[in-house]
Image (cartoon, rainbow, N blue to C red; front, top):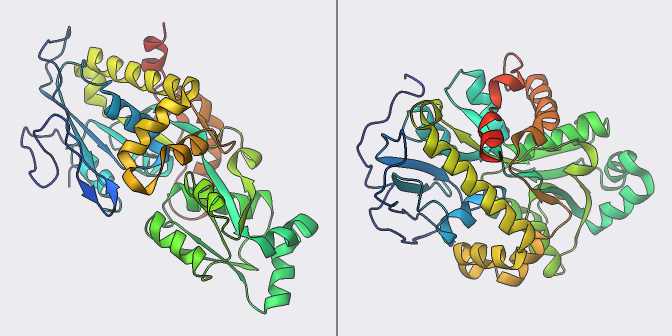
Length: 357
C-alpha cells in the first residue's frame, strides 16, 4: 500500500451521497451528510471536491456544528462528508489510502500515522480534556478514603482485580487511562485489569450490567449517566492529571494546504467559528448537536455535556502540545509505536495563525 497516495475523483457509492444535506441513521446515531459547496472559485483553488471524514461524537463537536450550520458551504469546492460511525479505524485506512482531505480523529491515531510518515498534520485541536474516569459509587468512596491504594483495597475485599472497560488499545481513551494509572497513580496493572471494547455502546452496557467497575470515557456519557442517576461517579478527569490533555483533532492532508491554501484556511476559519459558537452560545451548539444525535440525546443534555467541566473546546493546536508529548511517551512505553514522534512532525500551527491574523 502506498500511504497517502493521491485520491481519485471516484465517489465510493457506499460511503458518500450527492445530496446537499441528507441524514441517515446508522446504529441509532445520525450518519452521513454531504454538502455541495458554492460554485465560486477561491484564489488558487483547483479542488473540485473536499473530502471530510468524521464520526458523530463529542470529540469532533466542531465538525457537527460546522456541518449542521453550513459553515463549510462557502469554501469553494463541493464538500463530501462521510460518517464512519461504528466502522472502527476505517477513517485512518481511508485517509492513508489518499481518499480523505480532512479527518476528524483522535490524537493517538494521528500519532500512529505520523510514526508511519503518512502525509498530513494536526492543523486544529477540538478540545482539551473531554474524558472522565467513572467508577461505581462503592469504589468512588474507597478512592476518596485511600487514593491510589483503593485498587488494592478493592482487590482484598472482592478477591479480584478492579475491572475497567474502555476503548481499544490504540484509542485516546485507553492511552489516557494508562497514563492515569501508570504515571499519575503508580498503580499499573497489579490490581487492575482492562477490557477493551469497540464503541460507546458496548462500554456503556458493560458498566450498567455490572461487568465493569469503571471506565475512562468521553462526554456526553458521563452527563447522560448522571442524569439517569446511574450508580457511578466521576473521580477524576484528564485535565486534573495532564497539562493540555488532547482528545479529538482535525488532521489535514499536506496536499490541501500545499495546492489549495485558500481552501485550507477557510476550513480553519469554519472550525474557529464553530468553536466560538460552542463556547459563546452553548445552547445554540446543543441544538445543532442534538439534531445530529436524534432521540438519543436531548438538547438539554447536550448543553449540559457541552458546559461540563470535563471539556474545553478550542481550535489552537498548540494548546494540546504538552499533553500530546505525554501520550507519545505512553504509547512508546506500551509498545504502540517503535520510536517517539516529535511534535514538529505532528502539528502544523501556521494555518491557525494565518486564519486568526
